[in-house]
Length: 151
Image (cartoon, rainbow, N blue to C red):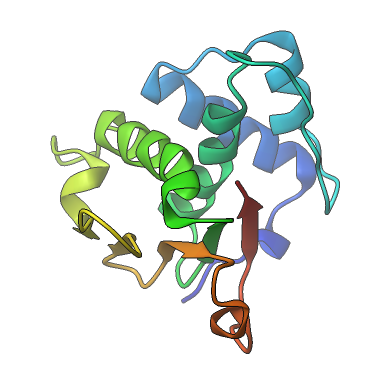
């Protein structure tokens, strides 16, 4: 049985996000909290240096891929290097998340992290997160995705 976001009310999703944040030890600032808790389809975060934009950009992909099966996410930047910050936050968050059996969420996925190029996290339940570059625009065509984070 596949669980979808549509099976939950926005309030239930917010409660699950709060639980996830608590388990990984993430305490967002008031501004970060406003972005994370927004139920808008499109969210744009414009802020200065050291605000935590990449941290916020990594939170939702980590949250949604850990709870929903076959949830597909791309982190898209002008270069692969510019998508790494969000990818690194995601790996940090899933490495902190404790599983009921005593392990960590990161133990339930395969991570491909080459020195250069596309990075990928594939969860046992079919969800994945990939970094992508806009250097070859044609490589961004034709994929069905649930979320895109523009880095």
